[in-house]
Image: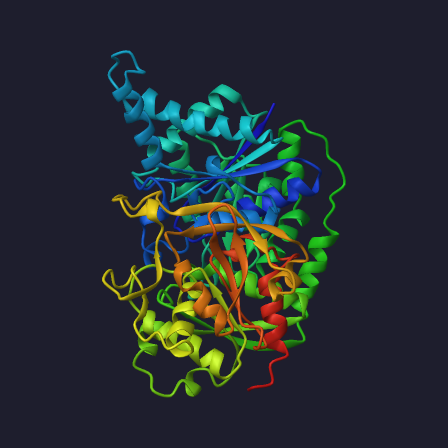
Length: 535
C-alpha cells in the first residue's frame, strides 16, 4: 500500500516547504523507495499557465505537458524523477472538475457541497497520484499557510484522509518559523506554538515539526516546543539557514528524518545511498573559478521567473568548478541603451530565455545582435530562438521588416507566425504546444555533437513557430537548422557554425537539467563561455 507524507506550513510563507518536501523525497529515495511528489495550490486558477511570471514566478512544464507551479522544478531537480499531471493540483482544477461532473449529472441530483463533494475530489487526487505512479511513498506539499481561507477545504480533506488511512499510512510534516529576537537575544517559540494550535483546530496533529531559524535551537527551546506541541523531541527537525540548498537534505539526514518517517510507516530501514549528493555538495562548496553570464529578459524584477534557467546555468558551472554570476539585464531598459558594451563588458556569455508579448522585444534583439557581431557565446531559449531568427533575417539577410505576428499581427515579413491550427483558438489556457516533442538532429552540427544522438525529446511551452517560407533564405546566408520536429516539419534548433557558440532552441532545456547532470545545451554554452577570451 502506498504511504503518504503531507508537508504543511505555518506562521508565514517562504519557509521552504518545497525544499523540505524535496529533501524528504530525496532521502526516502536514497533508502531505496520509489517516491512521487505533488503540490496542492489553493489559488482558483486552473493552473499557473495564464498567470504573470512577475506575480507567480516561472511556469514549470512536465513531460506530459502540464503547466505547473515552479516548486515542481525543485522536486524534479532533487529527486531526478519526471512528474506528471497528477503532481500539480489547484483549487481551480478541483472546483472545475466537480462542477463539470455536476453539469453532466454524475451526482444524481444531489446538492453539491464543500463537504463531501469538494473534499472527496481532493482526496481522489491524492489517491490518483499513488495509483498512477505506483510509488511506495507520495509526498504532497500544501501551498499557502495554515489558517488561510483558500486552503481550508484542503486541510479538511487531509483530516479526513488521516481518519481513513491512519498514522501507519499517513504522516504530517509541519514547517514553522522560530525567530531570533536580537534585542533580547533569544529564540521565540510562540509563533510555532500558535501555528500548531491552528493546525489542531483543523483536526490535524503534526507528526514531525521542521523549524526554520537562522541559528540552532537550544535544548530548552526544543523541549518547550515538544511540550506545547505534543511532539516527541526527536521529531523536531531543525532547518537552520544554509548558503547551499543542497546541504539541507544532509542536515535532515543527520537528524534521521527519513528513519522517523519509515518507522511510523513500519517500513524497512536500509542503508542510505547518498555519496553522489555529498560529492555534489563538496563541488558546490569548492568552486575554483567564476564567470558572469548576462540574462536578458522582461521579467527580471522577479528572479523566480527564470529559476530553472538560473539553476541550469549553475548545474553546468558545477561541472567546470565555476561559479556563475548572473548579470540581470532588463530588456525593456536595454531598448534605450546606446552603448551595449557597458552592459555586457564583464559577460562571457549572453542568454535570452522564454517569454510572451511585445514588451522589451527590441532590447532582446539588440542583445542577440551584439552577441553575434562580437562573437560572444549566445544561447536562446524558446522566445530567444524566435528572436535570433528575426535578428538574423533583419541584419544579415536584409529583411528589414522581419518580425513575429505575436508582436505585430500585420507585419509584412512574418518570420515567426502561428501554426495554422492555432489561428482559430480564442482561449489562452492550455492552447500552447506543451510537453515532450521529438526532435531529429542533423549530423555534423553542433547540436548533434552536444547530444551524441540522432533524436531527442524536449519539453515545449509556446504557441508561435518559425515560418518555413523563410528557411531557404536564412540557410543561404549561413544559418543552420540543426533540429527539426519531422512529423510537423517545425524548426527546433538553429545555430551559426562560424561562431564560438550561437545556438538557440524552440523548447525549454532548463526543465530537464539536474544538479549532477547538466543539460547538454547549458553544458556546452557554459564551456564556450568559460573559454571566451573576448572580454
